[in-house]
Amino acid sequence: MNNRRARTLTAVFAFSLILLLVAVLGHIWESDALVTDFSRKNLKPCGAYLFGTDWLGRDMLKRTAAGLSMSIRLGVVTAASSAVIALVLGTAAAVLGKAADMAVSGLIDTMMGIPHMLLLILISFACGKGFTGVAIGIALTHWPSLARLIRAEVLQLKASQYVKISERLGMGRWRIAAEHMLPHLVPQFLTGLVLMFPHAILHEASITFLGFGLPPEEPAIGIILSESMKYLITGKWWLAVFPGAALVATVLIFQGLGQSISGLLDPGSAHE
Image 1: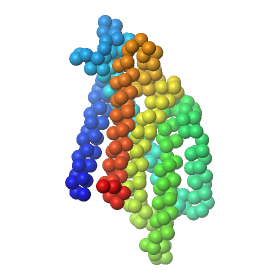
Image 2: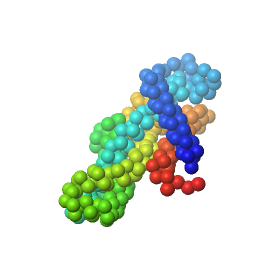
Image 3: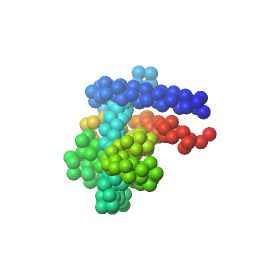
Image 4: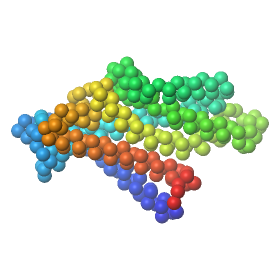
């Protein structure tokens, strides 16, 4: 079991370093990704340009790295915001009493009953699109599932003997929540935080692909994939294959990180 935990920690550390490297390189290359040079347009992948170039002569490796960097930064901001919203509402719903619990539960059900992409597009469009609009839209639409999970966990904790004893001893509700409940919610919070990353990245790419997300001048993965569609029929496969594969790989890495962290924080949930 110790060997497995060591391997898991090593994998988490390695993947985190890879993602950090991509984010840093992409940020450094962000201006270079916009540089056009018609003398090198539509080059296939080669030693000088590993991902080839597009119809404006832009380096697709740098554009892909810049797009992933933006997606990772957006994922960090939105996942953290959504997880905090879920923790606050999920805890408050079970601590403040039946009225608050009913209000938050109704809000969760309402949010989950609305088509996710439609709500995300509406919020993003209402907030002016761009990085800020997309970030607000994702942050305000990704918390319900985690909030429901945290609320259910808090309700179980409220029924435990040590919480009931604390109440009889006169301990306040918020003190009980901070001292007796919050430590038990950390695994769900951290796992939910990490697992929101791939959803945030995919939804950002999706609404950007549809034209409701980041502006066209940004080197975002959704924009790169959207622009490449018109060139696929001419045989320029590298314009979509490499950015798409990079996006899928990033999502899979985040999912793997989430599962690894879940196993580390809750060893009983891990299966041999």
